[in-house]
Length: 261
Ligand code: DGL
Image (tube, rainbow, N blue to C red):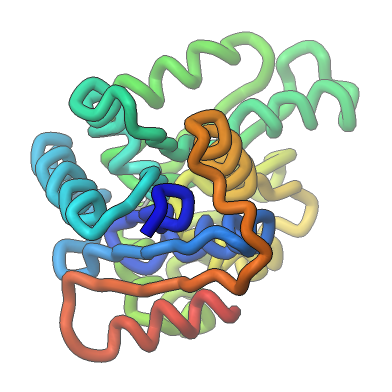
């Protein structure tokens, strides 16, 4: 197989990265993709950063072992814990991570809402590990004074989504309790790739807020970096999307179901 026809490897702790895969496939349908979900070890969001790092390296090595030409770490938690070290370990490999889309939310507050005095309120929903990482603190500092950024750790939410039914009562109840105090925010950043699958429910609780997620930006960056490395697959053929999971059983069916959602 020539290098350009090799797949892009997309990885997440489980099902969440499928939200990024969907964006990637929509903008670059000719790219072959292998999606690897580490559902056996999900959720990552409540493990130690060191554990997340180890699991992320193992997943990336697995994808490289089966011929991935580029890597998308479609997990905010794994990106925060490991992307810098991955780039050091594989300097010539295109590696793209995902981080909470705070920048577009800040710009929205300033330009669309005209709140140029730092008064727009941005709620950032993410896993506890993402929020505790230095990478996240730096991101917040970058926009210091330009908006009120409210980090909201959402323990176990990815785990509930991982069960496979985004419309479950359990999730509705969780969101009701979680979002009660944030009715007046201007925007919500979905800082975990599992959350786009419950976007409509978040919108229902916070109808006045605009919702941002980093999936499309990450997909665009992955395609840009792959092309810059001379590895784009521009052949006009139907691409192959292969799903892999570290967990046996029905997980692959679930990945496909979420891909089609
Ligand atoms: N989907 C992942 C993220 O973007 C993490 C979910 C988890 O495993 O806790 O952060």
